[in-house]
Length: 310
Image (cartoon, rainbow, N blue to C red; front, side):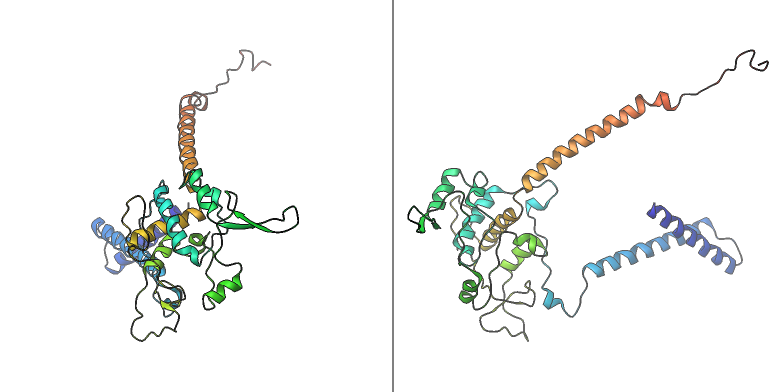
């Protein structure tokens, strides 16, 4: 409705302009001139709107360094409408997290059982959990004790509390990565660009000692050093362990930790689309073939022969 009214208003304004133009030229405007005028007006309006949209989405301002460089769009399969996770990539990504990221970052919302039938079998997850010791208790004599990990245990944290984490990282607090792809603008594109975007600071930019330059991080100075390089992790399935592949896998894993229901949600969405499209076609068929005779029926009243006498 709004677009129809806007088009009518635009057409009326164009006609008024053409009338004023014809009055000034002391003669009627030809159809070709009128069409050319409308086409030029429409092209100007569309071009102006597109330019305003582009400038609004890609506005250059003096505070761009404080906001961080906007990440590029990367072709992660789960970002498409019907795309799902690459579970082999999730398996490799967890290996990267365990060997590289878990030294500083935690996954408080992920338990060992969540990995079963997603990236590992139940036996593999049990063996991995048993490699860690968890504090449990109290026992029969009221004392706490350590035991091997179980499927119901969470992924172990690298530090017991925030203060210990800050003390070990020069005052910086490594965030929990359970929901990091949903907690940062740009999602997986931002995390991928951040992990692969370390570089030397440009001329005129001074970075305090202990910090590193990354144009994608707001302010440019980040406390986390670059930890992903070629060959930093060996994959057991033979996948090339380049820095870009390692980053892609760990970002896919972190996207799964933030949205573990994505595959099931899209599966249900496809079923819903099929069901509702079938019901829509059925409703259209019923509308046309069953109600058509009722909606087009003519109702006539035949008065009795002695109607006027009565």
